[in-house]
Each structure stands twice: as structure tokens, then as C-alpha cells.
Length: 146
Image 1 (cartoon, one colour):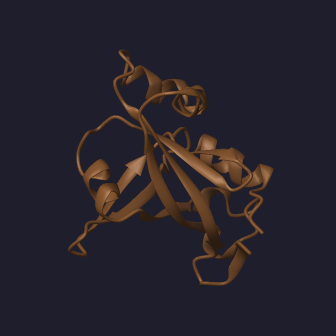
Image 2 (cartoon, rainbow, N blue to C red):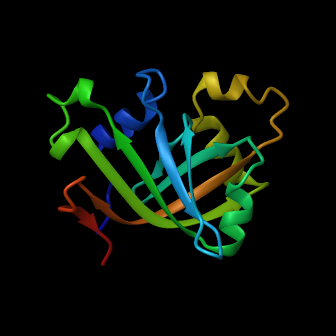
């Protein structure tokens, strides 16, 4: 069962301010991977992450072709408070684009002010990721969906 911890939420929320924004990996239909820093990654619910997409580059196209994603977080400077190998966490899951409605508004509300300021007209959209596996960098499973 996936139930992300308060520590995970705190680390993701402060990742941009710490200078280590989470990296989101997507893959196109033809297998071309793309990794992008996302300072807005946050815990949306016990088993779901979210981020605000405002770049309009590869994320939407890749997610239309392949919804599997990975979110990578690592902060060596906080290694004393992070109980996972190499102070790293990988969140694997299935993503979906949300362009309107209450889920989009909630993801916007969870987006840190610095990222909101980069989209003052709120033209972006939310991406919700239903997490099915959380692991350490070593591959050791931290949590897994049933």
C-alpha cells in the first residue's frame, strides 16, 4: 500500500528552495526518454503526486503516448534526515493531465509561490501521478501498491 509520509511531502515541497527540484521522467511512444526539473512536485494525496506544467514542451505529448513516469528526488545536503540510501527517492506511477476542474485547482494551490509566479496567468495545467512504487536509489522498495 502507498501512503506517502510527511517527510516525503516536506522534502518535495522544499526541493526547489533547496536547489534540488525533483526530476520528472517521461517516455515517448517510440521510447525516447525525457527528464525535466519540476520545482512544483508535491504530494497531492496519500498515493498521488502532482506538479504544475507550464513549459508546454514534451510532457503533454509524452503522456498522451505513455502515461508511465518516474519522479526522482535527491538531496545529499539533507542526508542526515533522509532515511533512504544516498538521500534519494524514486516515485514510479501513472500520470494524467488535468486541464480544468477541482483537481487542477487543488494542484495549483499546492504549487509553491515561486512556480505560481512563473505562470501569472495560470495558463498551465496539473499533472497527477498515481504512485504504485516508491524505492531507494539502490532499488530497495520503500512502498508498493497492492
